[in-house]
Image (cartoon, rainbow, N blue to C red; front, side, top):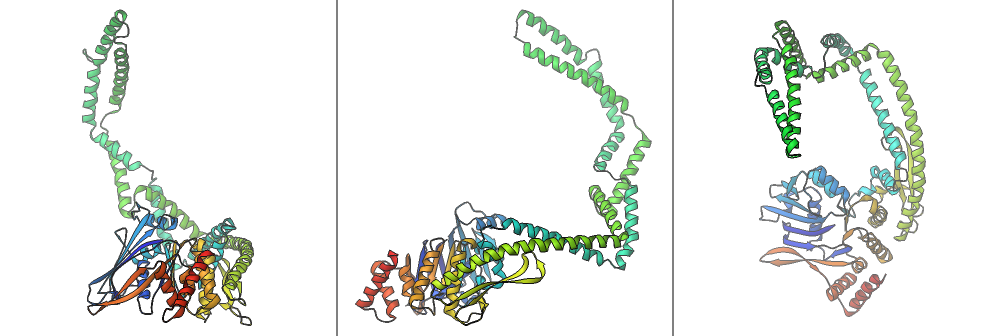
Length: 558
């Protein structure tokens, strides 16, 4: 949820800080007071396009900051982790600076991010809905996702099975297309590929061979020095004052001491004996190594020749030996494909045909489940819409076969609505009436509020063009949504204002020939006066105050 909004030098706002709470918050005010400007400022935090027009006249830049509580937003936290943004606390600081040049800088927790990354994060935290804005909920391309979200994983395993099958089908299709696109140039490459394969095969490449050759060459090149060192080491262990002999002698003395003073030097004797046997083993090892150490020019030449061959192959192909081994295998496969073109394509076509059949079969099962859930969702949406005083509204969820299956399924899904009796069903985005559009959008939002994942939603005058009982129902619906997520609403309706948990008044004042916007939280009598103003639309009387007081009390009893 949005906790604090700070705005500096933005449009007609000089400096403003607004504290928000959970539940339903209503912002009201006279036309032109600056409500839309505040919406625009919040829009900058979620990644809307910046403009130099937003910078207050005479200033160099505007600054908008928002503090968001992200404790409940697992999706946002996951994206932040992907972006390597520090999230030590349960809140997020989002900052947008807009310069008079038109450029802007986005920061999350003081780390600069791209506008795209800002949008990725913020779409999980805050959603702005306006009456005349094309809503994502109303766009057909999102309808299938809405249906799948509504199921609460009722057919998630079936959907996963379909998507896995479709991916295999697409992979094989791509493989066939690549094979069929093999033109004369590819066939001409066959000779080159065969030459390369023969060259690499003859080289008998082995993993780790270079390192072993380097060690062997180093050993032979330094055989004289190695032999001298081995002889010297062996002599130390075998001359008349050899260490093992002295250790054996020491062990005998320690045994004599232990016979007289038990346990005194028992540990020392064990260590001496152990070291004696270690040196004896070393003596034999050194002797064996001496026998194997001699300069052999022929073997050295063989090793160096082999190393030159491997280095030449590495330079020629630009690959390490391990990569060359993999490349050799790839060449073998490619040559086999080209030489067995007809056989390969026939086999692929059969695999594709089988996979297509599987896609269709699993897709039909998936569509059957989706249609079952769609009937439940349709009834739910109709119930919500009719509750918002659209008694004659009808809605259908349309399923049409796709010419080609895609990753989502084998059918085209779209929500169709008839707002009034006798009207044909049509796409949601083709609804002309602003009031009808607002109510439908609100109904959809109330249904999908949990599955969509945001922790806050801002309604920008979605109640415009609505009055009477419909306005009351919309207010109740917003209150219902506010039970799950934070709802901020700009409204001209007293029904909505009286229903709110918090009421903020937006106003503008003039000082030294400059106009600025102010925000004040309304409590008690101030709140009653503002609701009364919204009821009357003109002067506030004792009667309108009583009406406002009664409306507030009544809406908070329910």
